[in-house]
Image (tube, rainbow, N blue to C red):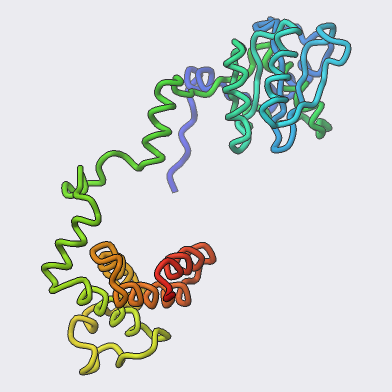
Length: 294
């Protein structure tokens, strides 16, 4: 086992890490009424972020009630921002708790309030500080003396582009055929024509779906009735997935064909019965109901 290398003085001071004695001394100073530290942010506030409500602390003397609770809904977040502005607050510290801080930060920035998004590891509670009210006051105190490190967050323009990218998964998935692809109905019609008609695709879809144990009707995998193509698809899940694709292509190529509609209904009924996810089962049942018989 390799021996851990001792940090140099430069690394220790640059990293901002304190030993046990230094940490204890700092805690004692912060707990004092006058810690003797330089005030970096005189107009600072602290917010303890929660899923249903947020506790906010401002310096004593800025308001008769320097600690208040606000709801997490939009109207109350705007009310919080207006109250902070009335108290002369220019910067606030919040913890990156789940996703609850995102709407809060955006609304505070809309009102011109600087937001310090800090990691919870840097704001560990002191012994005895267990309530939300004390937590927001503790954040305010740390922020007032410049003891919190702000996290990086991209500008609004970059965040907007990133949201669109995440929503749509990028403009290219690596397959050149999916870059400006043909309409699905046109592709389905062409494949159906090559296969010998939409009915052929539909029949193949039913054959694949019913070859899966529990699908019923046709002989099992690898038998004379199944054909070599079914035997090549060894996984039942693979066969069901391919059956769904073929049934959908057949329906898009010939949406009014009664036999195609019945085949699609049969395939997605089997998929719903085989699905292990409640959501997937619901989607498949909805698809099957679209082409159910009159």
